[in-house]
Length: 176
Image (cartoon, rainbow, N blue to C red):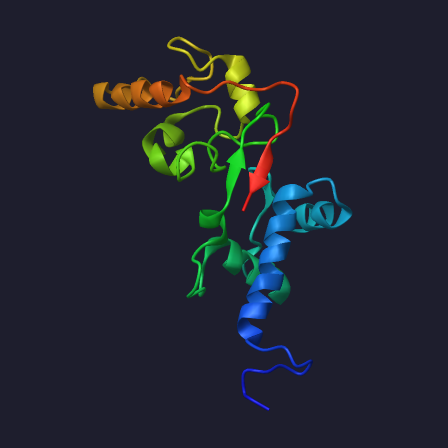
């Protein structure tokens, strides 16, 4: 028997384990009403629709799932969240800043400065749209007055959002 074969005859045991842990990452995204998700949130807290990492207080199992989610120690495939995206419909299940729903990275990474200055950091796309993300929309409430170069970033993000239209009749879906 080869060293790469597990006790149940599973070849490439490390990759198999990563795949099983990644499935839990996936379940954290798509089944937010499940009992196990509610248990994780009650134990570790909620951060933008996802259970927090838990740090040293987290179980070994949960720390490994967080590592997979964040791509820590994963040689192949990179970060779990780099390989998923959201198909937007009504925007009610998609977090505006932290979910990857427009472009190839979350808006909080692309527009970090704006995110840091914004009052509404933990809102869904649907809620931001309702507040109005147009030029004078209520979605753009800042902790302080913006500098000119920061206002240029607002113009850039508003131009990016100008092509977005929400579909009220359908819900958002994660894609792998």
